[in-house]
Length: 415
Image 1 (cartoon, rainbow, N blue to C red):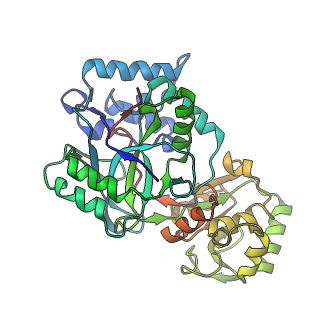
Image 2: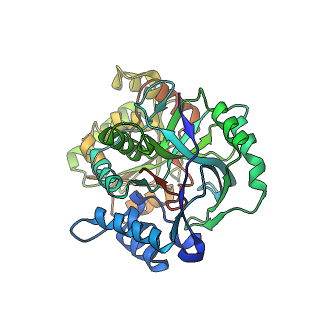
Image 3: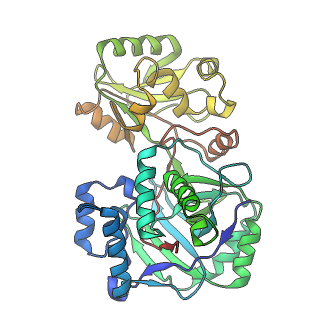
């Protein structure tokens, strides 16, 4: 079972570091060099200085030295004692709806993946894990939270925490996606005990942060013994939270050869119903794979798999929920088939890319940056759970949990 504990957090002191909005940042893996520079221009204390270190003989050692200097200056301070931290995120999703997602930050004991403990839902790659491990060794801290889900149909954990979110928040920052992030500290022993009891038998599903969790596992084993390094910083959100939403991440392919395009056309004609729709909207939820499709030879079309049996045959040996997963079926039937992409191509974005919105996908094809786009349907939460419970890991970026968790709200010391 998952073991939940409060944490003695490290956090920014606004009296020294300035407003929280100037020191938080998006997750490291979505920041390019220009955005990193812009974030540092806001404040020399912006968390990218330590979470995405650059330059020098050893950027990881430099990150550790910077964090130590911030602590010495009082820009980052240690909290008074153990607590859970409520996080409320008010946001507008890509679909235009205004929602609030509610969760809490805590420490979770690091264990191997498995039933009743912690499950992944996507494949991971070695490069980011090595980077995060070197940073963890140097700073001896979790700098950003892992986003995980738990089932709590009665919302017992949230009901224990909600009264403490009536006061003024201790942290309040609007990020670059116009999401308002508010933090409240909860050190009430009864409330903490109720949360721990509510999650005592819960299984946690990692929504975002697989590389960081696997880094935490490696670091815990490397250090050995018992101690703070056996825990990792997480933000936990109930599957039943009304503000929990999942959006799709769309697929793009470039540098296709005439032979690959001919093979793709043949596969589409054989296995898919094709409709000219005038837009890139996929078909409705449920049923076999349906995607919006665009190449530079014609108008947008909708491709709908003629029969689920085609996917079942292509993914023989995989669990039934996986065979119904749009991203997996698209990968098997078209991306790895006629378009000849490999796992390595997908991992390293060779001839391959992603788009957050259908509009972005269309623009990237029409500009010539990519040859074609596949626009996917959102993956329902229930399907994410079913795939994980079947012991399968989805293709990368099968889900887009929005909004992202900012880095810099809290840090979890590991020593």
